Length: 559
Image (tube, rainbow, N blue to C red; front, side, top):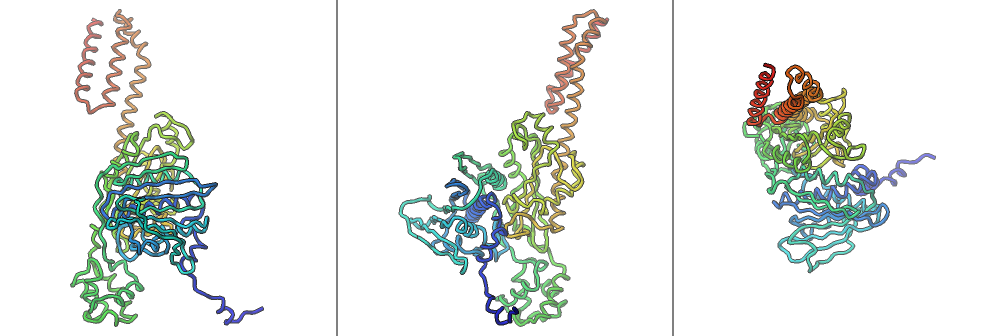
């Protein structure tokens, strides 16, 4: 039976963004129970860190996961941030694409306004339980409390209950959220919190696992990093549709003032040159430009040589802060280093790459299970791929590693130059953790779940250069370690044959074998000690004198 156009028309209707993600929740990262529980913790903690950092408050964050019944968990996250005003509270937690980050170029953990409201959506889909939120702002004595669902038809919050509480559930200010959802608990939650502590060394996180285990991730830095700055778009990163919208909305009266007011790095001279190449009058009204003129302007903006965007808008972790944080989390590591590259640019957006290396984790539990001593642990890990830890704007990226530009850059580096084993086109192997962090005003994620960085050539190139900088430091350490090991092995050979040498010398010199053997053992021990601690000048000199004395005594005995 054929359908008419009129019948097709009756079936067509608009859907809200909430309805779309209700049926496609995997696009937001809720594609399996384990990952879903992690996403709930991640989105809430990221929001807390952003709020505290922007308000200039050292974050104190409490995370608690409670197993309500089989595969049903209650996630609680509390912070000491500035709080959320009563009028905005419901929309922040119950409306997708609602927030302050999408319409500004600013380095932050979230970018789209989807994160925490998507957890509300997933929670009500899997358990039907409302999301519970407490908010206290410093200027008010009462704590505002709400229970809400997300109306998927209207993409608006449905408030089930709200009241002002006299007694303080929170401190002077902050937000507390409780969400009940379907999930499965795994160690990935602890991995995420540990990595978050590394990339946010100024934060203190208290965590209670479902079994009651309590873990504290303390601060290693007692001051907030330099705050990032909001930047204007750069002409090299603007497309036709974006420029058309900007021209219609601008308050500038002329196209010349439009360029100088609305874009970064564009001065009067550059603006005039763009107008000249595009053959557009500098005093023309922006909203009067037609499609053909806009196309000419787009081409002109790409043709004119314009300074790169300001690079002081970024706020990296910092090499010294990252190194200190890594040493705090991995105190038994043999070698730790970190570097921060100078900022660079892709598509008009500034970005910066940082790399940290942790080598030789003694006593850690191997992936195959069980505690290992130093030699066993290193031998076993030498055959395993390194652990790659990725961050974007201080947020750990735990999934889609193979689809990420940061991973691709690691694979493209020739690690054999830095004394590491590597098969072609793969990660190197060895007892090492490699930390790679990208920070930018706009990180190009491959999906809404923000788990992998898109493969831009500029990003891959800068990441490789940063890894090579850190790799050279690792190579120096491994070369020194190798030389020391070779020397120690040679000394052990001497030690093994010391009794036979002592016997031969005793026969030749007719001296006491035990005295000669003792002197030989002392000589070998002093040589090993010198090689292991070359910076100890006094020990070197003392050992040298002792060696000379032994030699003189042996010569006297031979005479």
